[in-house]
Length: 608
Ligand code: G6P
Figure 1: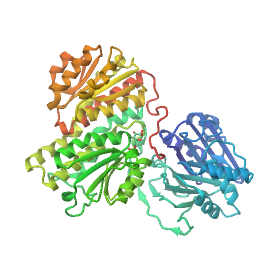
Figure 2: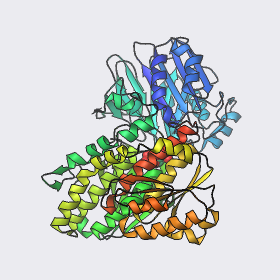
Figure 3: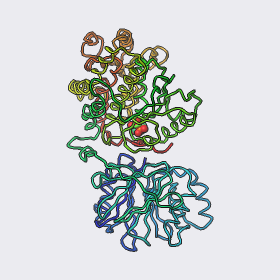
Figure 4: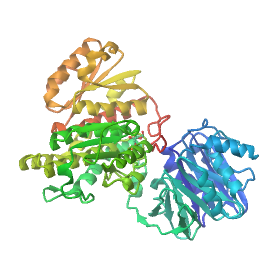
């Protein structure tokens, strides 16, 4: 949700904090602020709105000198996005400043207690209780004050704290919100996300729940909740810095759409060796996959839709029943699963709060968990019994594209791998499908190449308040993600509907003002979807069909057609989503929307 960053070293902190915040802006962007210590002086600057406004206010950092500081970019949860509610929050005595990502669930009780003790609150945020608690518990020893403070907090937090008594140090603490420390020479960093660090440091420490740390320019000490020093592993990040930059594209989203052939190659290629799938990063116990009786796929947002689309491949190839569950529902529901159920968890960030909670529930009942995750060392990757990474690289645009397609690629690999283990595919089918999986990056590239008409089509389809996406089976699954992309970035109401269900209600809404995007790549159901196209056209809707290159018959019954390369139906979602991503992108661009940072959305949803 929010993004936090911190620096201490030999350079002025403010420009580095501002650069870090720009990288984190996709996590939250309704207000931002920085706090810098300069000897015994603490300066705090906050603004509502974008980081650009903050940069202007502090003259790109020149207005607040000092070698140590913390910064925050906010996605409001408690209190409107105003200057006052923006972080950092300051203590009443002016000694401490705090930035926070997460939600303090017991803040109301703490606030009341602190008010009764005479502390004055300026903001409506949950975070402000933290800074007053620190002031209350501080008696010259920051470590003790942090231990006491965090012992009072319930909920999730990644905290960054500075104090004028020790102006060259930063204190950080983590519980259920991502927090990474970056190691430099004569300088050190922290951030909620690697993207803010990689320009400065590739050697990082992932903080775990309950831990806190003291950061100075020459050393980092990490402690357990009782304050005992712990040794942490240093991980090396090999992401390319340019992968986190826009590289000449107007938007990260377009850059990430174009990157998909490479991202899918990176996910697939290292795992296909000598005509076989080798999931080296997963060590299933001997006989495990052969003996499971069911799979549940759980996730949020697009990751959930990736699960919906891959379900068909897993069911068809492995013969196992597959259930898809939204993580926010599964965590509180009564779905049946046990030690013979494999739970597949999908998450780009690896930090989504509902997904983590669902995963913990499943583990309690003895189910094994397989995580499909993009961020190495993230909470979900660490919690899972098995982790299969998608190698999409950093994804910055809030609306996921390469995250989704690499998730599909990883799930397809798993489906075929499990099918071979379970002996549910013949050798010849295995070889055929494996060569299809290998061809996916090339097919995605072809789909990109075949999308030249989309900017023009977007001009026609952008002038609506509402549109429908229809399809059957695998096409329906792809339409769910297509509609989500459209609504996320263009704010046009877009609803995905199983084409066979149209007659049970939705068709009442169809008229000449509501275009229909009809997905018809599923060859077996092509004629049935064609009938649905004719039905909606008869009610006045403009129809844009997305279909495989050889289905020329669609041309005569649709207003517009986008062709994609032909591919085995079980994998077709990964190709047909490409024109839908581009369509959403160009419609949003046509309507002047803020594509990379859509209103009200955040990339990483680390609160419930
Ligand atoms: C947010 C993002 C989506 C993402 C979803 C799940 O809503 O905007 O793009 O699909 O969270 O996030 P995850 O990181 O778990 O895949």
